[in-house]
Length: 475
Ligand SMILES: Cc1ncc(COP(=O)(O)O)c(C=O)c1O
Image (cartoon, rainbow, N blue to C red):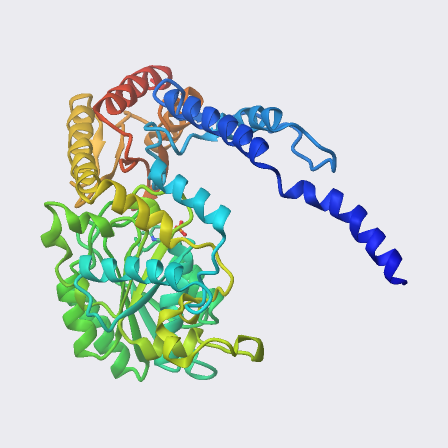
């Protein structure tokens, strides 16, 4: 190609490709539209339903230009008004959080400025913010300064990172897999078994440790299982406890479990994805022993109420974490070795990644910690209030939870499970407030997961009215 043709083509292509870099006037106009949309969405949150089930319309990519205003309308009907409204106060199913607005602003700034936060040398400020979030978490959970960690997309990936470090520290591979033993309770989140499968440990021996009536691991039973496995020639290597179970809001006795894990020289992992931040509340004594974990996961997108997409993992043994996740290549040579632990990519499977640090750092800096703690205390009281009101109505309740997740069922005279299932269906059809269900000890139960930051007493009252309405339809 001649130089003249090249220049000519570049000129023409530049006109079309330049459309991606919109001018200030258009940017302002678009930001105003989005700000208007966001404000209207948030203002309506208290009026709209917690759950709606509609058929999704046509969202195919048509390879043609559409105005932003039209796309926002489409987003509203197809996404925002369909399914669980996870930003609303009325999401009391699964594990809600809500999505604090200042975190959304942080994401916007991150997307505009697009720093490369994986490597310290590429964006020392962004990497430092990520590391400061990790430092803050270390102080919250009384982990030593020498511990390392990273921000992930959520609890499942954090578990993957932590268990990979445990696997590599104990060199669990090849023939060793079949005789290695992992201990957990049946109340662990399923992302635990999933992580073991993904990291090649599907064939380890899993021992489900008996639980007490509060759904907490019984330490003596754990010790007995480990002793027996050792006597039988197996190799125990990992104990997993949960600080806030998904179905029952229970905290395993962490201190006693740490004693056992350490006595047997096993890796002690704690899943605090849902419950972790309740350590900031009056329930902090229940978390004693969490600081003795070898690895801990905690989800700011759950009990710090941030929008979905940010989990965290702390690992005490930096060598174990590096052994799993540090890798280099010729094209990474501009980085410096002394920056090893300052570069988030060395502790995570991700290289180029969303700069998640700001979506945690900014809200904490703007609001301070008190509103977060108050929100958590509020949720603990709301679950108590909900349970008292349900009991008054004749519902049976699961044991008093350590945190803000509990469950209930109605004692119908016949076909208990079937009718509670029907009650759940009616609640979903009604949709004013979203609740989800589970099976606990073989029984169909309806869960209450009170965590979203916008959930207040009015929401619980609305849920109770809805339950009354739905119960009438089932009886
Ligand atoms: C206790 C617990 N651990 C892990 C997870 C998985 O977290 P994520 O959904 O962020 O991957 C959850 C999710 O609800 C959970 O409740």
